[in-house]
Image 1: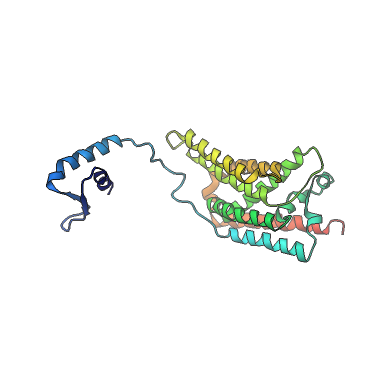
Image 2: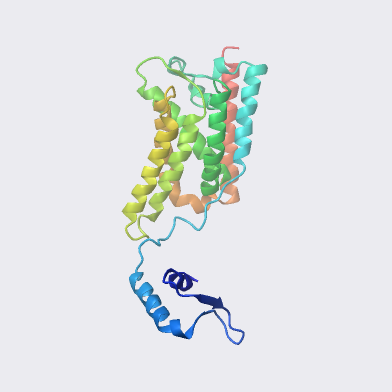
Length: 275
């Protein structure tokens, strides 16, 4: 079929057929076009010998894990709960002063809070897609836990580098963590792909561009976003050699249980602190 396209580009009509008496396929041309067709095909093969644009990819296909919709649904449910039933924002918001007093759970709880519907919709929409790809790459439980810890890393980064009292909330750090976790996967090409540095750099720059597009908008917590992105890069580089093992049921179940523990325990402390 490639050869037929070559001949079409030279104005030579051809037909791709499968012979009844044999195997494979054949390309039929008029007898008067045989020599020009043969010459065009030979030139095509010579010019494309060692074609560098065809390279091995990171893996044969990208997987999307639809369990990420449960995460987005949980975000929406907690937003409704805070808006209609229980004040979750006061005990759960990210607060550098409270963290300095020992309320470490505020590194975890702000991920589940949002200021308004537009804030929620943005994080739920982008997070659904990016978390689904992350979970598809690292495993359902392991990807979810890694992205969550990257979001916590973003809050920790903000706490360390804040020079003034700071309040914050939202899952943006976790979303940026997914960007970092996905971008670092290009490093898998480093040792087994020709000119690997080019592809590793392209993958990382793609992640940086996505971070700039989503994480540096006016009015957003850029420090937390950057911290989540960097945390994702670090966690991704640490987890990359173990990705096959992370897809096994035992690893996914253990990661999922640890994720649930790191959601419920901080919230239990937040809601019972001082009560």
